[in-house]
Length: 341
Image (tube, rainbow, N blue to C red; front, side, top):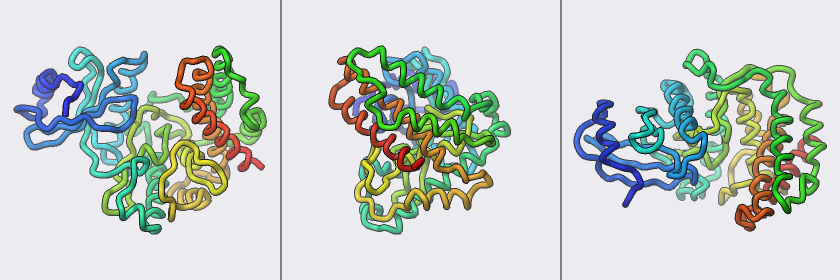
């Protein structure tokens, strides 16, 4: 399979980094996300996966790669399932962008379909849900300063900044002609007001994945255990319970339209209450406000998704995509309203 990576340049850089010798073999570009390029290849009997930004770089593409490499390197030896970090190249002239190499993951992403074992066994699906919670709790337990991530984010007033930050994002969409405004989102003001009035008074800062849901993990082929959390581009330092909230916001809830992915079949996964209860067995964090984080995740993700709808209203994004994501935004706010009562 053809790849968009300059293999000769990559081999020269690997030579200089002491990463094997000889030709690069079996280079195959992998599916997985639309934002970045993944390529699997072998050299001298070792298999690698390369990750780099897309050909048309965004302003923050190279910095995002540096941050991903930094957090994966910091997690080495931890209890957090993650791709093993090998090396990063910050010289943009080698391949036209910052890139890094990591170990391949033997597993599957459930959003792309499940093996027969996982699709037909309720107990295995139940374990999949609990394994995700355990991974989130393990990430939140890492001492970010001890692993060299001091300065990786801005934890001060992290929770206090959230509502204003995402309200400003939502308000900014008024620049797109044709967007009907936030009035079309159920409970948008009520949810914001409730979040501010019920915000937890304190938290212990830690590492946040930033987009923790079923489409950003890989499971083992032979069990319900997690093989790795992937796609670390939104990771930062803040309140790790927001990862639990993100899981709650994107988890299937009876009677509510699936938010952005719908794993089929859904025959044994835990309920949201079970996810929270299991997290409590794995952490010393106060979970009395667990669903506050779920509501915040609904608010934040809804505000983000609405941006594509606003661009579609102005003819700057496909209408079908905009309509679909707007429906997800509405679903998220309906979920938030259900939780706040």
